[in-house]
Amino acid sequence: MDALGWKPLAKIGGGRFSDIYRVLKSDSENNSANNEEQQLFALKLVDPDDEKPPHNIRNEIKILSDLKNAKEGQDAVIPNVINLISVSSNNIEYGLLFPLLDMTLNHVIKSHIKSRTIFNSDGTMKMRKVNTIPIDSAFKIVVGLMKGLDWIHKNGVIHRDINPNNILFGRENPEMPVIIDFGISYQEPYNNGLEKPNKKFTDIATGIYKAPELLLSKRDYSNKVDMWAVGILITVILSKDGKPIFEQDSMYSDLVLLSNILATFGSPPSDWSDCKGLTSFDSLNRTFFTKSPKPLEEIVPRLFEEPETLSSSKLQKTITGLTKYETSERLSAHDALAILLC
Ligand SMILES: Nc1ncnc2c1ncn2[C@@H]1O[C@H](COP(=O)(O)OP(=O)(O)OP(=O)(O)O)[C@@H](O)[C@H]1O
Image 1: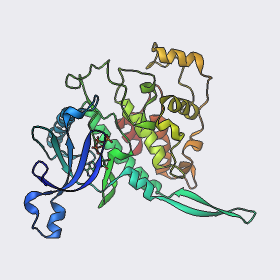
Image 2: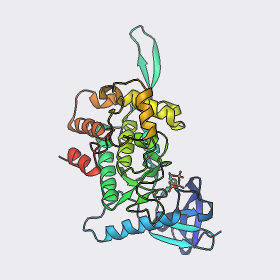
Image 3: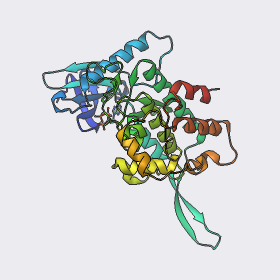
Image 4: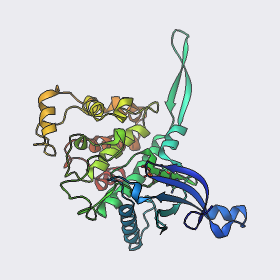
């Protein structure tokens, strides 16, 4: 079997509209095992006729190519955004060739969740799940994510689907995240003719990573939707026991997600400038009781464990700044880097 000139070895992923294969360069079949390693790539195959907006493979190719060209004009390489090696197509499908990476952030998070025996004062014991990821490793991952997002945003792109399955790592560099999947991304100013800036799709982002303004149907949103997503992502990386801060059902219901966001971060300001005038926000203002925010210590207790380190205090500031409702106050990736690297 041959896929657009590549020999597929195994399916390694895929979404609603794509299949991702580990592939070998066809001419390297007879090479030694070591050489083969270097000839392995990831191939994303998509049939554009199957896609539904906002998924658009041609737009993904355009955005990745522009990011690659922008990278080439730079002195320093930005390793935190996936490199599109090449594109091929037949009459049916597009094949996007990428460097092969080894694990998603989801795998990294799961690999650090361990079962521990806890002894109670009455002599009984119980098993508890504990997240063992070191704060310093989490810190390095967050810095890498911010560098990638800063680069993407500086180049006029909103990723729109920052979540743990779209962040990959190579085995040799498990603290250096690489942002993938620009399948629903937006390129300013008009997303290549697909969406007007004030009429963007709101059906973007995955589960608990949706920013609150999206849940209220704001259509002229900005790249700050990515910053909210990364704020929630940090709380997941640093969770006490591997469980997200929001209830399980928030993954599937926008209403449950919204009520979980309010219960965690408090009600948005009644004059929230991003959503003022939107019908959904006006009814929210009338209907919901005013909620106070939970203290950050309750949201990410691991960052308050003794002894407090420089990394943990910088991460506290970063999460607080990323989870602001008012997007003019929400940190940009550039602002976050200023906090993290000062
Ligand atoms: N370069 C790569 N190296 C290794 N695995 C990859 C690579 N690219 C993608 N994958 C795997 O395939 C999965 C899906 O990739 P991608 O997000 O690009 O496809 P998608 O169709 O947009 O998926 P979805 O619809 O779920 O967002 C990733 O989560 C990852 O597990």
